[in-house]
Structures are given as structure tokens and as C-alpha cells.
Image 1 (spheres, helix red, strand yellow):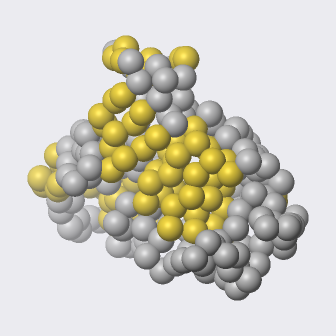
Image 2 (cartoon, helix red, strand yellow):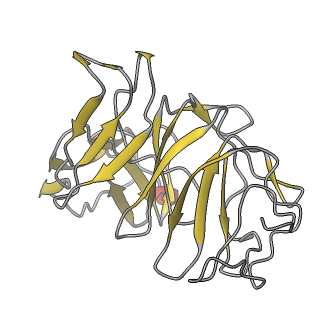
Image 3 (cartoon, helix red, strand yellow):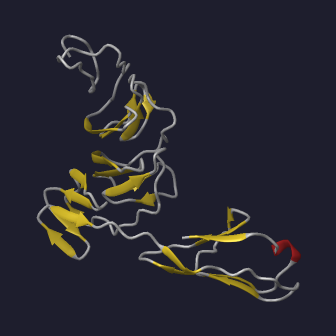
Length: 239
């Protein structure tokens, strides 16, 4: 810019001159398609790059206000380019693009065309959507006032919907607890069950023992066929 090398990103002063306080080093090694500025001045960038200033960052990264890479943002890769980003008020980041997966090592987590990341760059697994099945992928995203998401592209084939490039994804209501699990007192060897009833759509359950997830305990009921002293604990369920 103006004779100064700055690979694919610069910051300009109000008069259009280069801001020397924004130092990018080697910059991005591929195209930058979208930038989203956080309230604290940090920038989330998405595109077709694999490194920033020679550090791996697979299609998405976050920069500090001085242009350095934010090391607190997870170094996890999309498998193809990011075309659009939207920041939610709670700090989470919605990404759209040509990707099908997020994560570079097995097991892959399928996120065809649309995914939401937590504020630290990890995948938000509570964002559940059927996915884009064919043809084009999102090029632009826009959050509405009620939390719904407008997705735009050249031509979208969405599950049960064939549209000429625009889809509105409505914000799902938060799940609610209709009947919480009841405290259980049992003797050794007795059968014990905890049950929860919840309201909402596309619900997923995870039972926890003293705060730690219990492997395979992902239904509305947690059952002990023969309770033992080692089972005595505080049990909770995350929905």
C-alpha cells in the first residue's frame, strides 16, 4: 500500500494514510474474504489463507488491535475457505463459506457451509443446523434484531427448501426444564433412576457426575441397575 508491503491486510488512518501502528509481519498467505470487528477492537478474519505471519491458522484467525495474532483464539482449521462472518452480541462468531468440516484431526465435526464458534474459537456444538446439501454456499450473513440469521448466496439447496439465494434461519427458543431430576436416597444394590423433562427443539442431553460428563449418558434418564457406594455423588444434566 503506497509502496509499503503488507500482505493482504492494512489499516488506514481517517485521511487514508497507512497506520504504522498496525503491524502484520508476513501477513496472510491467501485471500482475506471477510473481517468482523469486535467491540474491544480485535478483528476476526476469514478467507482462503492457511497462515498469518507464518503461524498456522486455517481459514480463520483473530488479530489484536496492533495487528498481532491473538494467541487466545483456537488454532483450528476449516477445510475450505470462509466467505462471511457475523459476530453475535454474546461474542460467539457465525461463519459461512465453502467448508464442510472444522478441525484438522479425526474425529472431524461436520459443519457443512455454516458453523458457529465460541468466543475463543472452539466449535459451538449447540449450534445445530441441517446443513447445506448442494450447489452454492453462503457468501453473506446478517443477524436480525430477534437473533435470526439471514444467509445469502448465488443459489442455495437447503433441506426441504430450494431457494434463489436467500434463507432465513430462525433463532430457536432456549430449552426449558419442565420437570427437574429429583434427589434420590437408596440402599446398596437398589435400582436408581434420575429423569428430566425439558421443552424445546433438537434437544441433546449430557448427565454429569460431580461436574464431569458421564460417557454414554445422553438420554432423558440416568439409571443405575444396582447402586453402589461409589455411585454416591452430585448428579446434574446439561441440556
